[in-house]
Image 1 (cartoon, rainbow, N blue to C red):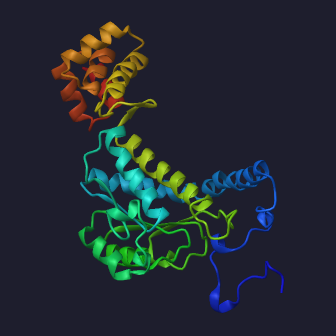
Image 2 (image 1 turned 180 degrees about the vertical axis):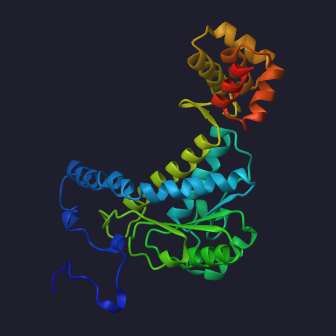
Image 3 (image 1 turned 120 degrees about the horizontal axis):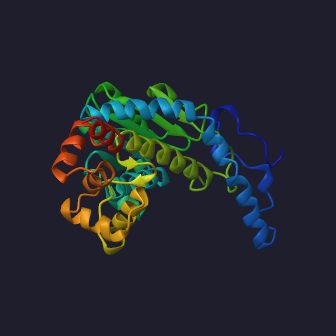
Length: 307
């Protein structure tokens, strides 16, 4: 039998678990060649993600609709998939000023599994269902599993769907067994890993890109940016406080001193200061315009120009 003979029908592997013919000699080549082989495989990921962008756009639009109505987004994943989910959810808070609890990441085995693997947690369908108990009918539930068959994710998606939530599966397996458990399946075809079954490689990179797209596009639609600037940035440290002023100068083209004065007059509210400077209005008028525009800077400026 060839060392690359496919598995028998009773143990069909996910694409990520198959052996990659391009890397069978990866342990017998110089270090730079090992890295070239891995890099060549990594280069396949953006194309695989590009193929699911139309479906991802549908997910973004529905997510935005539900967030505007007061819903939440829940990520569910085990191992690397769970860690990718936790990272995405956590970074939305300082980047876009999103309140904690709007996008929530659940990882099999609990928070301790971020640093120390919890063996067997991925295989617990009841565990996934229990973690999804807080999902409501107005929410979005996103299950992440490279193979597309993790029992933990299955339990979470089934419970979320039973609750009436909008369900999404993110996998690296176009033929994922759990595809039928989700309203939308984003199955990026990343193929066999450079090291068979090591889904912390291409599959995880694809999941990171998909979540980057989902969360960032949703935040843009919800008005957390003006142009490509983070106007709801939470200035929680010295670097970020400096960035707030930089954003104002870049958005307005005005001197730093004028931006600092407007920011102080706006009680440190970046969006308010921005509308004041670009719309030649007062902080109270800027706040009213932003409130009427659901936080959208462009819409607030357009309203200000009409008055």
